[in-house]
Image 1 (spheres, rainbow, N blue to C red):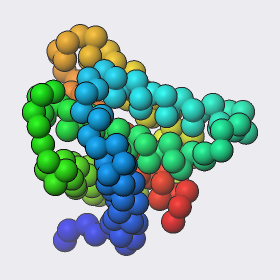
Image 2 (image 1 turned 60 degrees about the vertical axis):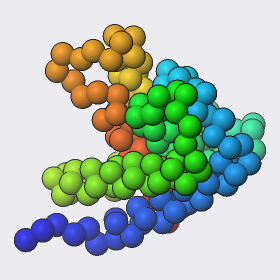
Image 3 (image 1 turned 135 degrees about the vertical axis):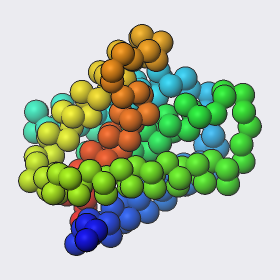
Image 4 (image 1 turned 120 degrees about the vertical axis):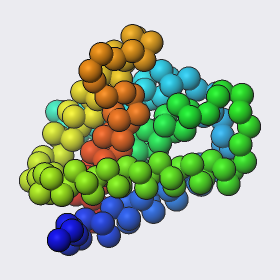
Length: 180
C-alpha cells in the first residue's frame, strides 16, 4: 500500500504555483540578472531572508512593509536559483523557457523528496512551529556556508544541493501554514 497524503500534495502544488508565478513575473521584469550571482552570493541572499524572518519572529514587529510570507517565497526561489546555478556554468546562456523548465523540474524534485520524507515522518511538520522552520533553514545555510568554505568537499554529509532541497521544503511548509 503506497502512502498518499490527504491534502499535502494539493497544498504543496498551490504553494508551487504561487512561488512559480512570482519567479516568472520577476524574470519578466529583471530577466535572468540573477545568473551573474555565484552560489555563495545566493547563499547569502537566502541568509538575509531567513535572518529577517527570525528577527521579526523575535521582535514581534517589522518596520519594512513586507511580511514573512514574501521572505519564505524568496527562500524557495533563491534556493531553486541556487540549484540552477550548481547545474549551469556562469556563461551558459539559456532562454526564459529553459530557465522556467529547470525551475519547474527542481521544484518537482523538491516535492518528490518531501513526499518520500513525509511518508517516513508522518507529516510531523504540521505540528512544528513556524519558528522551527526558520531555525532549520538558518542551520542549513550554515551547513552550506561550511561546505562552500570547504570547496564542496564533504566526508560524510550531503552536499549543497540536498540542503537547498531541504530549505525549499521547510519554506513550503511555512507557506502552507501561513497561506492555506
